[in-house]
Image (tube, rainbow, N blue to C red; front, side):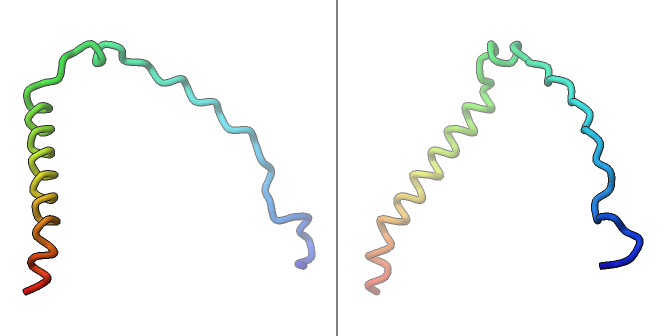
Amino acid sequence: MRAGRSGCYAAVEPAEELPEPEEDDEDDDEPESEDDEEAEDEAAFEDDDAGELLDELPRLSLR
């Protein structure tokens, strides 16, 4: 131990309380935009492609 030190921790002060986040209820009532629907459609299409590739994997590995 080093001489002259009573401990390795500095005095701890309580943290400031953070303000409560504001709730935004307005966004929940709005219908989804067409862009959101298109993005979901594209994601579903990509999932289908991945499934088709997985189906082809055993056939390709036999070559």
